[in-house]
Length: 177
Image (cartoon, rainbow, N blue to C red; front, top):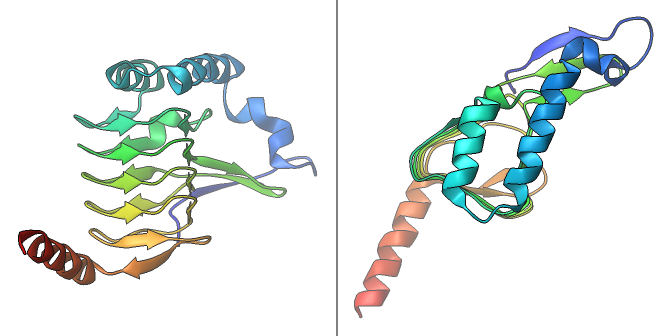
């Protein structure tokens, strides 16, 4: 179960209709401009600076966001990415979701040494454990344990941490042969 805060829609209309009662128009406009700049810049350290300084995201040391990564425009401050992680090309990280009857907001926590494959979508309220690998084009709709290889739509564990360690050990033995 994802950890989100639920807020009912008011007045018999969908929750997105009340977007600027939820979050300031000026905050969204500023975040949008910063995110668009970051999506196209090839300079990783510049992206990390923009995310930390202007979006209030927690971004670890030597973490890399590839081109076209799209952090949440409404609540980027609810995104935390650990040290030495890679967020792949065109990945979307959402900390909110607007539904017909309610909107939900939740923290997204991505651990240390995590690899997120290209074109993935991470939903609000999930935690991805240290050392996890998420394959390309994955919908992360639940927590991912540390050290696993996961993928698919919706996400499933493909290899457990123990299986991954065994595969890595076998790979090292093959290289030495």
